[in-house]
Image 1 (tube, each protein chain N blue to C red):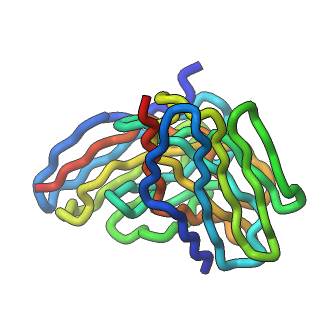
Image 2: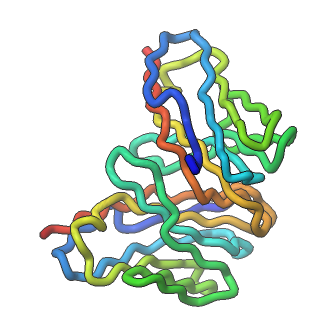
Image 3: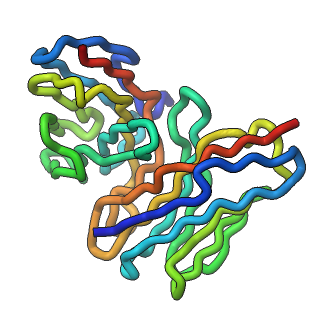
Length: 115
Length: 112
């Protein structure tokens, strides 16, 4: 049981490049979400999904796209990388409980640097 | 929207002492309050949570208390050990919103 798996673990991009951060979970969780973590800022929600085919914006969605074609996968796409997107990105999943996404399991994170 | 403030930002204790981290929230409709522990360079881990219909919850050396009237909740760690050293995040969620709001974290340092 791998839990939540993120790839890659590290990535360096040049400004303007695009890339996709991969996230997969094997717990059959309905809810998945992407966060960015910056020093002193805690965790900020980028996008989330409450099931296959359903996505919505979080607090800081600009510059990112997501899709959820299967229950297992929830990739995050950077459309045109900017230095302000340098951060650590965490994917999370949770079972449906109550009315919120309430992350229960996080991936190991992707450390992304934009030059 | 919800606003969560977490204090202190840094907490230094001696091994065996107790540690208390406090969070305040603004939305009285929030009804779910989790706590996460993040060791240096690692993923956040859910360690304990509480819902608004409960005033206190314990799990071995950790406990969380909730005061709905004052809109604050606290994490209590007793008999601290060096492996408790980490950054702890609180969060609040509810009131019709799917989105949890996180505090900015408390760096707990336990000195042997």
